[in-house]
View 1 (cartoon, rainbow, N blue to C red):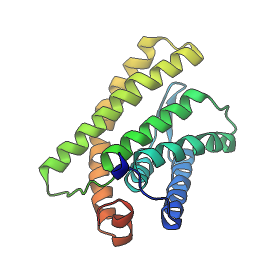
View 2: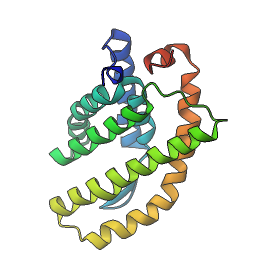
View 3: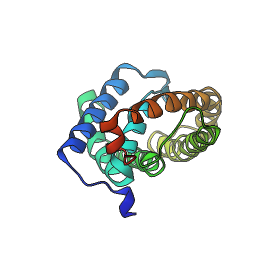
View 4: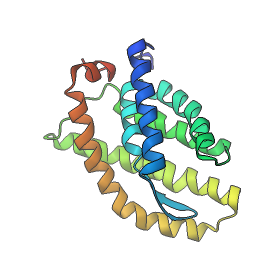
Length: 183
Protein backbone atom coordinates (compact mmCIF):
# COMPACT_ATOMS: atom_id res chain seq x y z
CA UNK A 1 0.00 0.00 0.00
CA UNK A 2 2.91 2.37 0.65
CA UNK A 3 3.63 2.46 -3.08
CA UNK A 4 0.13 3.86 -3.55
CA UNK A 5 0.57 6.79 -1.12
CA UNK A 6 2.81 9.50 -2.59
CA UNK A 7 4.62 11.96 -0.36
CA UNK A 8 2.70 15.24 -0.09
CA UNK A 9 5.00 17.81 -1.64
CA UNK A 10 4.27 21.42 -2.51
CA UNK A 11 4.17 20.45 -6.18
CA UNK A 12 1.70 17.63 -5.51
CA UNK A 13 -0.50 19.86 -3.35
CA UNK A 14 -0.54 22.52 -6.08
CA UNK A 15 -1.47 19.89 -8.69
CA UNK A 16 -4.23 18.55 -6.43
CA UNK A 17 -5.57 22.07 -5.87
CA UNK A 18 -5.62 22.75 -9.62
CA UNK A 19 -7.36 19.45 -10.27
CA UNK A 20 -9.99 20.13 -7.59
CA UNK A 21 -10.59 23.57 -9.08
CA UNK A 22 -11.10 21.85 -12.43
CA UNK A 23 -13.59 19.45 -10.79
CA UNK A 24 -15.57 22.40 -9.47
CA UNK A 25 -15.61 24.18 -12.83
CA UNK A 26 -16.61 21.05 -14.76
CA UNK A 27 -19.27 20.13 -12.19
CA UNK A 28 -20.87 23.58 -12.22
CA UNK A 29 -20.62 24.47 -15.90
CA UNK A 30 -20.40 21.22 -17.87
CA UNK A 31 -23.08 19.03 -16.27
CA UNK A 32 -26.30 18.15 -18.03
CA UNK A 33 -29.28 17.52 -15.74
CA UNK A 34 -31.70 15.09 -17.37
CA UNK A 35 -34.02 14.71 -14.37
CA UNK A 36 -33.97 15.16 -10.60
CA UNK A 37 -32.28 11.79 -10.23
CA UNK A 38 -30.12 11.66 -13.35
CA UNK A 39 -27.46 13.91 -14.77
CA UNK A 40 -24.54 13.55 -17.14
CA UNK A 41 -21.34 14.89 -15.61
CA UNK A 42 -17.89 15.16 -17.07
CA UNK A 43 -16.23 15.32 -13.65
CA UNK A 44 -14.79 11.88 -14.32
CA UNK A 45 -12.04 13.60 -16.32
CA UNK A 46 -10.55 15.68 -13.48
CA UNK A 47 -11.37 12.90 -10.98
CA UNK A 48 -9.33 10.47 -13.07
CA UNK A 49 -6.46 12.97 -13.15
CA UNK A 50 -6.77 13.47 -9.38
CA UNK A 51 -6.53 9.73 -8.78
CA UNK A 52 -3.60 9.39 -11.18
CA UNK A 53 -1.54 12.13 -9.50
CA UNK A 54 -2.56 11.72 -5.85
CA UNK A 55 -2.96 7.96 -5.48
CA UNK A 56 -5.96 6.32 -3.85
CA UNK A 57 -5.61 7.59 -0.28
CA UNK A 58 -4.90 11.26 -0.99
CA UNK A 59 -7.43 11.34 -3.82
CA UNK A 60 -10.12 10.00 -1.47
CA UNK A 61 -9.13 12.40 1.33
CA UNK A 62 -9.11 15.48 -0.88
CA UNK A 63 -12.31 14.46 -2.68
CA UNK A 64 -14.03 14.02 0.69
CA UNK A 65 -12.76 17.39 1.93
CA UNK A 66 -13.57 19.27 -1.26
CA UNK A 67 -17.07 17.88 -1.86
CA UNK A 68 -18.74 19.79 1.03
CA UNK A 69 -16.92 22.96 -0.05
CA UNK A 70 -18.19 22.60 -3.62
CA UNK A 71 -21.72 21.92 -2.37
CA UNK A 72 -21.65 25.04 -0.19
CA UNK A 73 -20.60 27.13 -3.19
CA UNK A 74 -23.52 25.71 -5.19
CA UNK A 75 -26.08 26.46 -2.48
CA UNK A 76 -27.21 22.86 -2.07
CA UNK A 77 -27.29 20.86 1.16
CA UNK A 78 -24.38 18.68 2.23
CA UNK A 79 -25.23 14.99 2.51
CA UNK A 80 -22.70 12.58 4.00
CA UNK A 81 -23.52 9.89 1.44
CA UNK A 82 -22.37 12.12 -1.45
CA UNK A 83 -19.08 12.76 0.36
CA UNK A 84 -18.66 9.00 0.75
CA UNK A 85 -19.51 8.37 -2.91
CA UNK A 86 -16.96 10.99 -4.07
CA UNK A 87 -14.29 9.52 -1.77
CA UNK A 88 -14.90 5.95 -2.97
CA UNK A 89 -14.83 7.07 -6.60
CA UNK A 90 -11.56 8.97 -6.09
CA UNK A 91 -10.06 5.97 -4.26
CA UNK A 92 -10.90 3.65 -7.17
CA UNK A 93 -9.42 6.07 -9.71
CA UNK A 94 -6.29 6.42 -7.59
CA UNK A 95 -5.92 2.71 -6.94
CA UNK A 96 -5.98 1.81 -10.62
CA UNK A 97 -4.42 4.85 -12.33
CA UNK A 98 -1.64 5.92 -9.93
CA UNK A 99 1.72 4.52 -11.15
CA UNK A 100 0.01 2.98 -14.19
CA UNK A 101 1.54 4.00 -17.52
CA UNK A 102 -0.98 3.93 -20.36
CA UNK A 103 -0.41 3.85 -24.11
CA UNK A 104 -3.14 4.48 -26.66
CA UNK A 105 -1.53 1.95 -29.01
CA UNK A 106 -1.66 -0.87 -26.46
CA UNK A 107 -4.88 -2.94 -26.62
CA UNK A 108 -4.27 -4.24 -23.10
CA UNK A 109 -4.37 -0.66 -21.79
CA UNK A 110 -7.71 -0.08 -23.53
CA UNK A 111 -9.09 -3.24 -21.86
CA UNK A 112 -7.61 -2.15 -18.51
CA UNK A 113 -9.33 1.25 -18.73
CA UNK A 114 -12.57 -0.40 -19.91
CA UNK A 115 -12.53 -2.67 -16.87
CA UNK A 116 -12.00 0.26 -14.51
CA UNK A 117 -14.75 2.30 -16.16
CA UNK A 118 -17.18 -0.62 -15.84
CA UNK A 119 -16.12 -1.15 -12.20
CA UNK A 120 -16.76 2.51 -11.38
CA UNK A 121 -20.11 2.44 -13.19
CA UNK A 122 -21.19 -0.63 -11.22
CA UNK A 123 -19.98 0.55 -7.81
CA UNK A 124 -20.87 4.23 -8.09
CA UNK A 125 -23.68 4.53 -10.67
CA UNK A 126 -25.51 1.25 -10.05
CA UNK A 127 -24.95 0.61 -6.33
CA UNK A 128 -23.99 3.63 -4.23
CA UNK A 129 -25.82 6.48 -6.01
CA UNK A 130 -29.20 4.69 -6.36
CA UNK A 131 -29.07 3.64 -2.71
CA UNK A 132 -28.36 7.23 -1.65
CA UNK A 133 -31.09 8.66 -3.89
CA UNK A 134 -33.63 6.07 -2.75
CA UNK A 135 -33.04 6.57 0.97
CA UNK A 136 -32.65 10.36 0.88
CA UNK A 137 -35.43 11.22 -1.53
CA UNK A 138 -37.59 8.09 -1.71
CA UNK A 139 -37.09 7.69 -5.45
CA UNK A 140 -38.48 4.35 -6.70
CA UNK A 141 -35.87 1.77 -7.64
CA UNK A 142 -37.29 1.23 -11.12
CA UNK A 143 -36.97 4.92 -11.93
CA UNK A 144 -33.39 4.96 -10.71
CA UNK A 145 -32.21 1.91 -12.60
CA UNK A 146 -34.10 2.22 -15.88
CA UNK A 147 -32.56 5.60 -16.67
CA UNK A 148 -29.10 4.55 -15.44
CA UNK A 149 -28.95 1.56 -17.79
CA UNK A 150 -29.73 3.75 -20.78
CA UNK A 151 -27.21 6.36 -19.64
CA UNK A 152 -24.51 3.70 -19.15
CA UNK A 153 -24.83 2.50 -22.75
CA UNK A 154 -23.59 5.89 -23.93
CA UNK A 155 -21.43 6.87 -20.98
CA UNK A 156 -19.17 3.82 -20.70
CA UNK A 157 -17.68 4.07 -24.23
CA UNK A 158 -17.34 7.85 -23.84
CA UNK A 159 -15.44 7.48 -20.56
CA UNK A 160 -13.15 4.83 -22.00
CA UNK A 161 -12.23 6.91 -25.05
CA UNK A 162 -11.79 10.17 -23.14
CA UNK A 163 -9.68 8.52 -20.43
CA UNK A 164 -7.45 6.89 -23.04
CA UNK A 165 -7.04 10.21 -24.83
CA UNK A 166 -6.37 12.30 -21.71
CA UNK A 167 -4.21 10.19 -19.37
CA UNK A 168 -1.59 8.96 -21.85
CA UNK A 169 -1.25 12.52 -23.17
CA UNK A 170 -0.72 13.90 -19.66
CA UNK A 171 1.76 11.12 -18.88
CA UNK A 172 4.00 12.46 -21.65
CA UNK A 173 4.52 15.68 -19.64
CA UNK A 174 7.60 14.94 -17.47
CA UNK A 175 6.39 16.83 -14.36
CA UNK A 176 2.99 15.14 -14.42
CA UNK A 177 4.53 11.73 -15.12
CA UNK A 178 6.65 12.17 -11.98
CA UNK A 179 3.58 13.12 -9.96
CA UNK A 180 1.75 10.09 -11.36
CA UNK A 181 4.59 7.89 -10.08
CA UNK A 182 5.61 6.80 -13.56
CA UNK A 183 9.08 8.35 -13.87
